[in-house]
Length: 164
Image 1 (cartoon, one colour):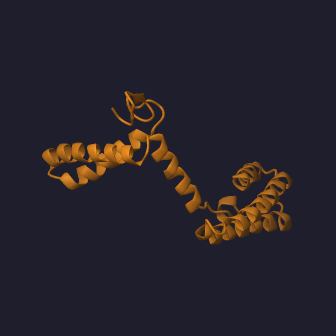
Image 2 (spheres, helix red, strand yellow):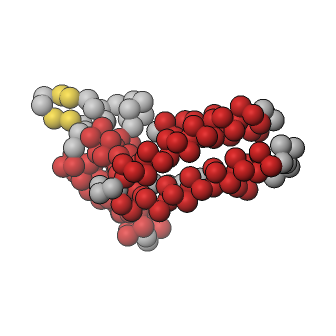
Image 3 (cartoon, helix red, strand yellow):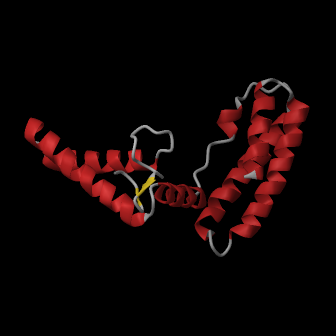
């Protein structure tokens, strides 16, 4: 997280043309990425190659800025976004927790699947597509915390939670 924050600050400074400050943030980011790479094993071995590659991209940007301070190469050409499995797993766990647990999430998805199959199956003759869409939509709504559907997410009534 610290690596990403420092990198984002560096990118912002880089885009504003504040190259020396950007280099300092990028160097901080590289140090944090090195620590993340060391800490990735053994629980997140699948992320190590992605972290290493991303760290190398940031290092390449530092080298470009130092060797050619007036470079016109956009930062996006050198530093690409990275998707880590550890971040995806944490997000998935948080979503399931916010919906009230795995059983609640599965129940909400099942209800959505039946509703979607009924609506799209009857109207368009697409029951499987309707089931997939309904399950996805209901599961998504159950994880929201903004009250998009009263009675969903973390409401607790009579000892139950999820969508009521």
